[in-house]
Image 1 (spheres, rainbow, N blue to C red):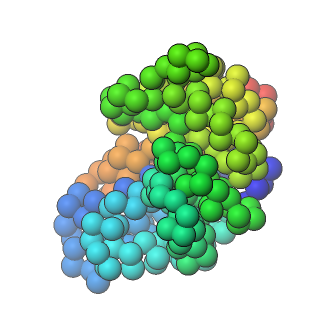
Image 2: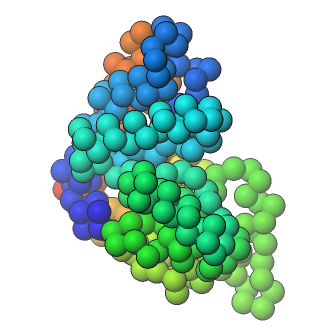
Length: 277
């Protein structure tokens, strides 16, 4: 999926919502534990309830890897289900990989060839040779960690280079543009750092931004849209816990759908205000 196709899906669904499939087997309704694959059973119902309101899903790999081979099986089944039922959904593997050389190439093969994701999150700490192996796949994306929403972001991401005057996250944005273009690279920018989005847009005006931290983590959707939208929306705003755990009862899927619809309706207003609908 290229940038224009992603924007067309945003316009069609009147939404720039990404639903995080952070499926914790200890948090799903107990009756699902009796099924042969509780994680997939949960995901399937969440997907069926939310697909009309979202343009992307983002499974966090830790939730699946923690279950060993069964978790990987659940992840594969989840991806196959989305691909078979909702072909135009953008799929992000939230894996935060960051190794180099052959190792990085094998990660890329796993997510793009074996699992058929559209995008994978990558940590840039080891430089260009940790990122470039992911960039050799047509219509596949790297989602580079730039400015994250956690409190520990201040440990390193705001360190200043005395020569250039750039903060570390600004250096990441500037340097990485030599590796790729807005057609195959987007950036993670936390919603709790929404005040920085205007500055970030000056550096990367045309790239899509994946914005976690709205909802349960306290980020403001209105502030993100005001500071981060561009002429093609340029935003995928992720919500995980606020949607998939809207209820822990047998009505969990219904409540997830209602929560996703509420966010979508808010996004529709913001898209109209921006003149994108």
